Length: 247
Ligand code: NDP
Image 1 (cartoon, rainbow, N blue to C red):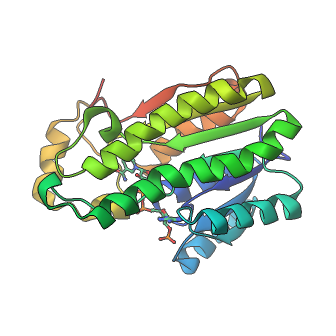
Image 2: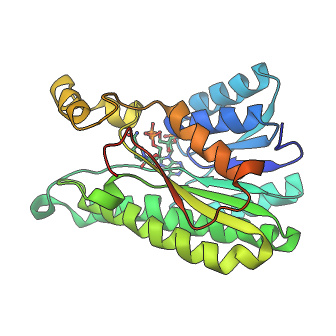
Image 3: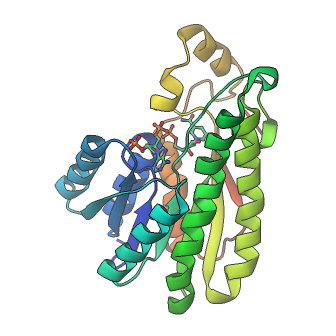
């Protein structure tokens, strides 16, 4: 239980990868704040799963892309909880489309949620981490930020941007004992990828050396390593959880 006494905020913790991260951090002893934007029932279900396993958690609603709303919510959380020790920037969306047809609003929505949201939350959380001289920030990036992907120029740009953000924050915060790392998943079975039809999933599997899509728990394991005792000398790095599809 290496995270006893620590407070952890997971953005987009209601479903998919974020849900698995919440459950894992709860099992490690952290008090988990489960963020969501539109799905209170899913967030509450995640909270109940943590409690059923003997952990503690609260749900907290805010839109990571809305700077004022996210900052206020994180300030309030820190006031209520007394501290915030771990932040996992996981909230993310896709608005796919080929460049020629991509609407500016789809570009903005993805950049605002996936990249600006991480900046806003990390900025708000880092103040108290700097004061306490301890913090762990993990950004959930993507294989697509490294490889690019036709039809995902907005998403790939946001995730590649997240890599630069991760390294810059790692350098800025290192002197205060705050580590900042990224986890870059490949194709993971969640609502986000359930829209891919069987044929596309088979094509994707054919490009994965381990020949299967990953699970949210595979990603949660990498996050747990980075925020737990064993990850304390690691900063500015990316753990790729992708079955070998990008090396
Ligand atoms: P899901 O679509 O399953 O879940 C998305 C989560 O993000 C939900 O909890 C949702 O909340 C939350 N969310 C979306 N927009 C906002 C917002 N504006 N503010 C706060 N919360 C928000 O996604 P995944 O679990 O698949 O993905 C999680 C992360 O992992 C994303 O950053 C994604 O880009 C990344 N990733 C996923 C991969 C995959 O194959 N699945 C591969 C590589 C990276 P609500 O329930 O309220 O809607």
